[in-house]
Image (tube, rainbow, N blue to C red):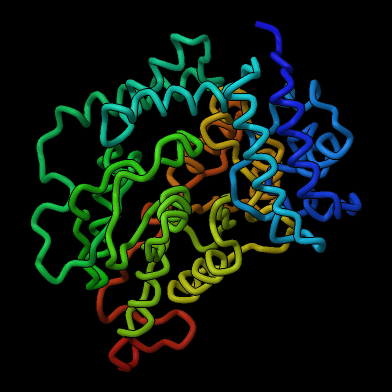
Length: 390
């Protein structure tokens, strides 16, 4: 179907141009964009097309669907142009009038449709819907393995998420993906319990709405603070003006307050916090976790901590440049990658598998766990109770 460039579209783009006239194309928005390596029409180019009235090119720019909505471009703009909102507006125009077809747009449309009648996204049903529309994961072997694992988990007996929690447990928003990976979920609840911070799934905690790219809003509302295990969920809930704290930050803070130590699956690691995380606090939390475990955190590389992994689209388009660069760095350091995002873990594992790399990629609770009480701090030789370790 051809692009429908109607008078209404021209008028809408003209109105957008009035809101960003002060842009002088300095490029700081592109430099701040965690997807910058992968975009032909990055934030700077989109604003330029708006100002130039290049409506046909705007309506054909699939890169607006690769915006993660982290708002780094808006925050970086010295002229206070709300670049992220401009990109979202162009995306909405494409929804109504354009024919752009890409993995990210298709994923958002599938998510919107499935969330219309469901509290959460079912990953298997989502994958089948994407395949039916012609989008097959690039890592077919990995996708098949995940499918088999999920089928086994469906028939696995055991406690339901949050079961057995005490009334003193912290409200926890698990999101869509984590409850469907029972091993990752079990590790998450176990490390929280072992550190003395029990968690319980918040009641009626449906999807945060982020996968639908703004078309379906969060199905969870609460005035009380809630812990999150997914940067996208954290982002979506904060957009809905809820109080959130990443679980991993809460666990590290709790361990520090109570003199507890952590242990790790390896003595050194490369951190990856994902494009929707608050980069500074997320890296600081990982650094604090490393200190509690006496592990080395490798951060001596520029701008790779939060380079976008491609989210759902990355599974269908292939690894982003950010992922390739991060894997290359980790391989050069002979260190595993650790991320607080389950989707980022899966994307990176797929990319490593396709490149035949042996780099391990861990989800936070797969790498960090509670050290037994009385374990000596490797830097001081003291136990958490202050006794010398012999």
